[in-house]
Image 1: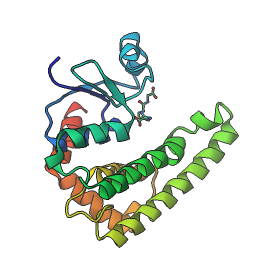
Image 2: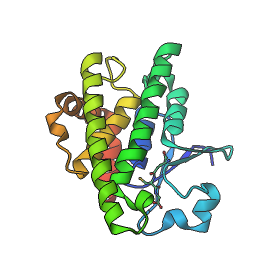
Image 3: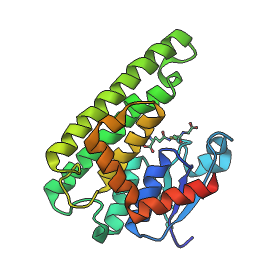
Image 4: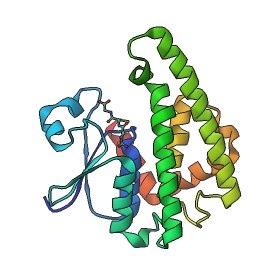
Length: 213
Ligand SMILES: N[C@@H](CCC(=O)N[C@@H](CS)C(=O)NCC(=O)O)C(=O)O
């Protein structure tokens, strides 16, 4: 293996890593697995990533990096000229702050809204309560991010071009669409999402995932 392998799944949280990897310009091979078909539970996959999740980044030296913020940081470091994270200490820390926020928000609100079973178990009434509460949390989080983007002048970090945290946030906006949240009403996020979608690397990643069906 001479290039990193990004293990991912179409239109999942792995898409965030796929998009950032494409924007970085770093050569890598995307390998798609099907969560629904149980690929992430197979012994060969678990041997590579015992968490049984996508995304996972397998480096040529055998190192496997998991967790979206860590994978995004690896691509940002590997291609500093791509502008995925600021280079100065403060800007970089603020970038990590937003990556952590997006990740935490995805876990506590979006993932719980999509799959309330992770918190409620098999109890149907508890699932309904978790789904309703988590969906409200997702809506609140998007409103918070919309205000932050407005304050910073169009991107989370006030940069001229969207950075890795903006790509993560745009994915949360898309997930919000699946939850039927009215993110379009959040005009700053809608504008940011359109800018992120138009980035050549992001557009290429989306097209590659669409082509797989
Ligand atoms: N902590 C993980 C979360 C990623 C995640 O939620 N992955 C889901 C897909 S969206 C997954 O792989 N699920 C596998 C399964 O449900 O079996 C990360 O940040 O990479």
